Length: 255
Image (cartoon, rainbow, N blue to C red; front, side, top):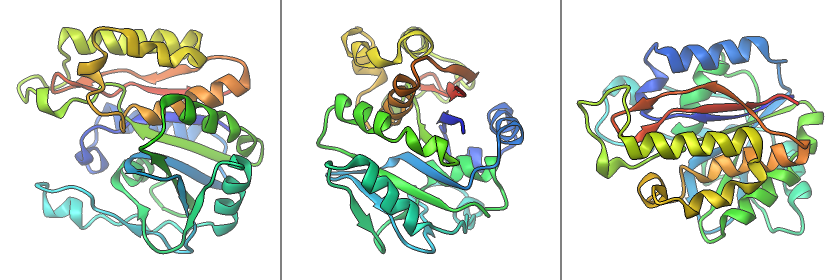
């Protein structure tokens, strides 16, 4: 079962028809239908590792300033408490809390799944990003999740390789500043050739600009860990930029 990192960008991608959504839809059309999905989103960034374990996760609209149509969007996928327990088992002895009532599916998850599986008929659980742990922690968790792929579970990580809202330039739609392009291209080299060395990106001079806060970058570490477990790199699903300081680059691990 493949695993993916999808650059989700603007929440409006959930409603718009653009080349990113089209690429995600083609990927789902070509991939085997999963039994369930484990989602890792930039938007559940908390001081603990947890996994949603409710039967009916709510759709979370964790943003402001967008059209009413986006707030009305629901993604009523069922949960999967058994999968949540399996995730906790695989990640042991790391403590993983089973969240049966607090969270749900945030827009980092449903904005991409609404393109992959618009019928919302595949069970979904979401894994949090532990805000107090380094990149190596997330790489190790990604590697430990590898058996799920053999069990028919698709792993979908959602973030952005480059994500700096303070430097956005609304006149630069579908374009990137030079520093953003350099960092995204360097990340691509690591992910395709040596994802286990992803932490070395922090040594690049563009890193503080590309990753001013870690939450959008960390989901990529899960795909890198999965690639390390598989003994190879990943392929690019789609590349692109938006508003000067966002990378929409997405990756797939097939092997």
